[in-house]
Length: 291
Image (cartoon, rainbow, N blue to C red):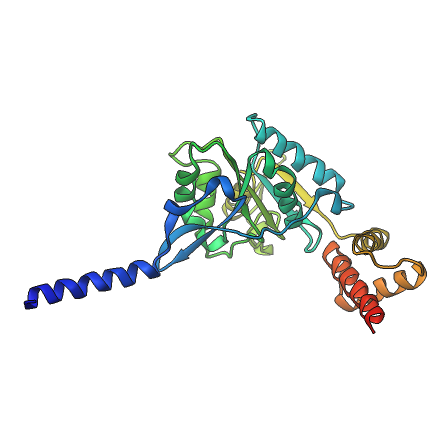
């Protein structure tokens, strides 16, 4: 083997090694056998990765958010029926069921062709690539952006803004964006920005900074607001999860007292804290029986 052939052989081995490191890409996707996907970036290349064990949440498991549940369920059923439907922004207090509500839709409607793609905020610039991948497919896709927010100097929100409304490319009718956030307008708001507002002809005109921030959230056709739970609502959720976990409920007064003590220690009365308390309590009682 001469020197040129040796160089060529080494180059081929190097290429093979690099190809093993690179993601397989969408060529090996099994659309029909998977319900959930995650967009990943490796070595600068984006690809869809199958979520083999999706988090299963049922709509019936979610309490005290009936109005929000009804609205997003109706919008999703319209989408699955091929009817006009809107992108959805779920915003509000942490731990109140925003993410769980979206996950529950996949559990409820996967057998009707619903699929879900999770995308991190840092990968929003890849949205056009994702849209190209799903364009024309028979499934209906929800693009799930969890805990979405942008800092003042973060320009990646413009990619989301363009996809929601304003891009030269036409929107595909088999994909909607469902996003959760603790911020109503997805971006930080500062007191000084209100000073730019002016009163003209009896009407308030906001400054450019406020207009720019509200222009993103306004592109979601459905807004669902989530608020902190009252003490009664929190306790009701605790008991619901305890029943689901098969924990004994023979001493409700003690359960209420311990549930409130748990919430006080966490500094929050939310659905998430109720779930965590129920798991802690059911686990403790189960461990006592094992002993």
